[in-house]
Amino acid sequence: GSGFRLWALTMNDHKFDLHATTGESQQPRTSVSHPLRFDVLSETPDHRSTLSLTLQPGKKGRGQTNTYWERDLLTDLLAMQKNGYTIVVSMLTDNEIHQQHLEDLPRHCQDLGLELLRLSQAKGAALSQDAFDNMAKNLTKQYESGRRIVIFSTNGWGRAALLAGCVLARLKPKWTAEKIIQHVRSVRSPWCLVHTDHMHFLEQYVKRVAAEEAEAPLHMPPPPPALAATPAAS
Image (cartoon, rainbow, N blue to C red; front, side, top):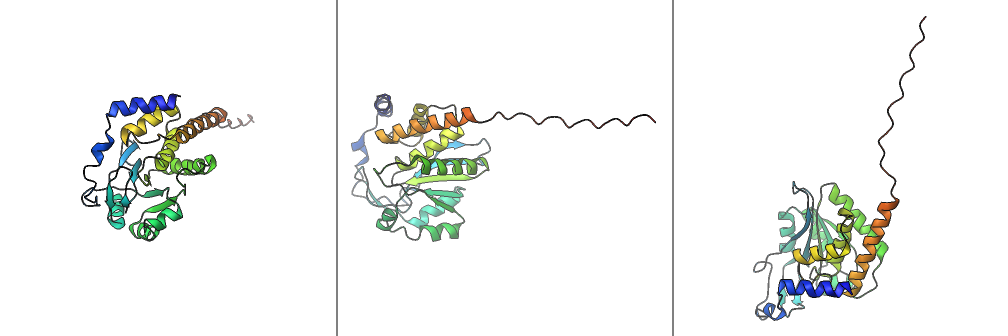
């Protein structure tokens, strides 16, 4: 299908070598050695509003590319604050938060003035279009009001990238699903949105947004105020 063709083209363009990422597998990557990277998918010209992706703050353990992580949660959240982000969106489940020892995430966010939003989505679980739609609508509204938003999942490649894609579908209604996927991969990683269910979900979501746009009433200018009646000559 077109999704797999897009995947092959993108991987070829990036000349991405999985084994090249495993050379430092024995050396833990920390918040100091590898500061949190924010990949900006959309930004207003004045930099007031931003939509970005990143990996899980405070990430620990072995990663998908055999990289070992030993990050510090508070250090990573401080990096978000320093970069001006005001909304942090987590895609992790309660179980993942417990396994990664992120129980202090809400308290740290509150202390740092970061608004924490959650869309708990288990890896490989069925995707709820309504849940993603509600969050995407909210984030679109926040973006348009001047907020700086960063979304994370374990790697910022799958669940987080899918939610960001839904927001992009609303921010850029003329973009096709293929264009959104290419954009997210070019900005974040060629590993973004490679699962068939994610690509199919985004295609359906773009159609949903297009249908809403088609049904939206035209914004007609208000009629001119009625002219005051001319008093009759006495």
